[in-house]
Length: 133
Length: 366
Image (cartoon, rainbow over all chains, first blue to last red; front, side, top):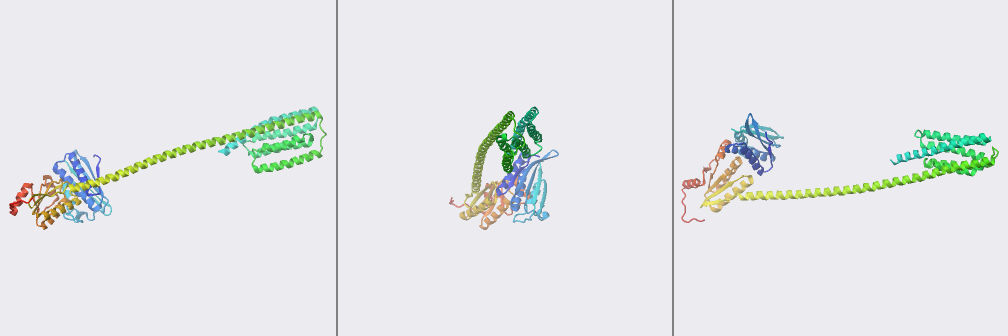
């Protein structure tokens, strides 16, 4: 595991920085164009969630290795209001803002591994990984 | 520190004084004793006795230095001396002037060692004692007057002793004074040095602090400037990226490039709607070749803008979705609904023209 690159999310622009960072690392790790797009889009969705609901948070991107396979790990954390109903939030079409409700379930489909941890009033952490084929 | 210094000095002086007195006392005792034996003068024997008393007192004081307080020791010495003096004065009226002087001298001896209060009492006692001694010596005759030889010898020794002690005392005073002055001067120069040192340190620290402050201020100014620059650049980027290009009469192309944050999305919508209205466009083509990512936010922007444009009576078409973006959109289950998509601009224009049965007018207003 290399040291993670962290991007603080405080504005719209930082979302772009976060996904560019993720995409760059994916490129370095040898992911193909489609996987790069998937990773960048997932980061974009998750970072946008941070900005929309918590106002600020961090996106950490790093390489992971398991049984000889290389992958990318993305951790999006915030100290926002947290998620009240974790099950509903993973259903397509459910949105507590006027969004499309595709962010979290979409990101899950885009990545290989997806883990959502949240506590109301404390914050939310989303960890996801994608492995190189 | 000074008090301890003083005390150590006092002890040293006292020791020295007593060390003089012991030989003098013992010497005198021997001489008087010898004299008494030789001349069979009980008077001399009495003298020997008193000097012996002084000698014993001196030895005792010498031995007790450190065990008892200095004023106590000095008091003992003074009392021993006074006893001698009184006895000598009374028995040998001839020595009266010298002995009275000696009485006073003992107080001078005690001066450096006793506190002022005791000194006052001592002086008073000494004065009274001299008075009594003079009176008694005048009117009390115990012994027959000494033979002239003996009296002279006595004078001689007494004077010698008194002078010796006087000189010793004077020398002590001088030494004490010089030492005190030296101490004061050393302390003073040390203080002056320390002050100079401190002032130098303060000046140095102030300079360092001022430098640090200047640094901090410079950095703050830098940061403010950089923030302003950053803001300006962001503004410039926003402005850069929303051109609307009329390709044919009634057909607008809007290339979307880079990131579509919410501010830019608003500008996009504004530009498009304004252009549609101004030029009477019937078709708007969004060229998204330059968008590396289409996420839910971008999709939302496109859908909303499309809805608004439709209300103005124009159609919306999207061209330039890249293969990887297409994959992502499917995974995200993004549905662009009724927006038609074409692979490139040519197809888009041709397709729409066919669909709407549009005929190019004779004169093209450019």
